[in-house]
Amino acid sequence: MFDRIMLLSMFLLTASTGIALYRVMKGPTVHDRILALDSIGYIVIGIVAVHSIMLDSRAYLETILLIGILAFLSTVALSKYMEGGIVIGTKSDD
Amino acid sequence: MIEFAVGFFIVVGTLMSLFSSLGIIRLPDVYNRAHASTKSATLGILCILLGAFFYFFFTHAESSIRLLLGIVFVFLTAPVAGHLIIRSAHRSKVRLADISVRDDLQSHLDGRELRKK
Image (cartoon, rainbow over all chains, first blue to last red; front, side):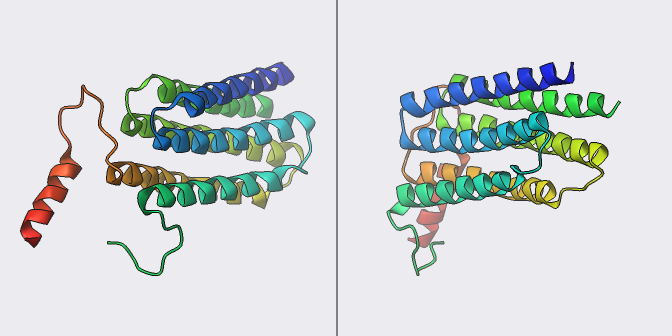
């Protein structure tokens, strides 16, 4: 029963990744694509957590922190780039 | 018993993530999609990570500090990322959907520019 619940939630998380991937391919503006990629990053964190429960192993838990930091930094860099073209600037914008 | 609680948390988080993806694909413009993406995806991932923490806490008797750090990190950074995307979209003049009624941020910015002149 427990394994089937984990398998079902893995399937549903993969389906939601595919749905968000459709928005990445279709999205009318670049910001839609950035938003969907950010959402895919968070769903992948959930997939790693469910996978580590299914395998009953604690070896994959660092990956959660790693993917979280990478998704956040890539979102910040992409949105700053789309905003003004300067990712790391010295002048603070009000 | 603990498997029941863990399964409940995981299923709730999974359904939240699925609904946020449906919101990303169904809502009309980028501002509404950000509403669907940031809020429900954050809650869903928090539920899944909390379920994983309870699983490792009650079956292996080990409180995994990495999962707690992941919860805190996602809870802190997901709203900031959503805010940054939407600020960048509004500054690059992404149009609102046709059914939108008002744009308070644009009128606020117009008023500020008028006061500057």
